[in-house]
Amino acid sequence: MAEHHEMMGGKLHVYRRENSGYWQCSTFLNGKNWRVSTKEDSLAHAKDFAEDWYLGLRGKSHAGVLKVGKTFKQAAEQFVHEFGILTAGERNQKYVDGLAHKIKLHLLPFFEGKVLSEITPGLVQEYRIHRMTSRVDKKTGEPVRPSRSTLHKEIVTLRHVEAVQISGQPLRIPRDRLARVSDAGELAALRDARQSRRLLADAHCHPSAF
Image 1 (cartoon, rainbow, N blue to C red):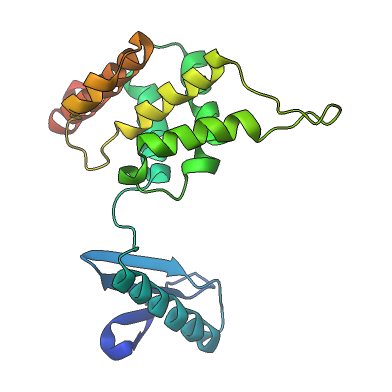
Image 2: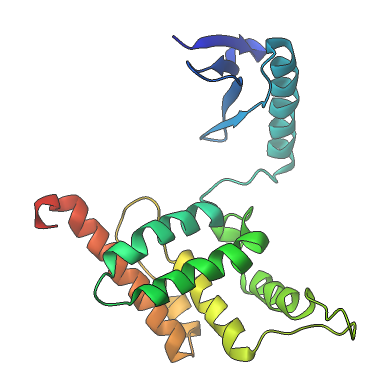
């Protein structure tokens, strides 16, 4: 049976699951459950960590900077898990592996901690600049810029991930997003993602069909 302790008048919980060496802590704030591992096996140290963590969350909440919503990392993990299965026979494995590679190597390091609603056109532009300036040739000291085609494919992959809704509901691509899509490749990417979500919805409703 899990060990459990309450703090902050019952608003903060510190607990340890069976067969786990570390204590966890959790709280409910701004309509969402928050939890994290303390990485501590000592209860006293875990309580100190939990109190600091809780007060930090409360401070962010009062300041209006506490992020609520699905993160890019969550959407990326869901996309990678689903896309290859749901497009089997329509996309070759090399294409699917290429998307996963772009996410892991380039997109996740930059967008990992961002909530999907934070990925604005301005942030995408920052990503483009980052990719064009982050690598430097050791001999010349000059930036090693990715080709226009490579950067374009990364943005297409980003649009794939952005289109994922982890709730399991069929994907809806906002009309204003479609209006901004001027590239046929990007539009095709969005349509692929929409098709993937529809297939997933069908699988949930009619599992015997798969």
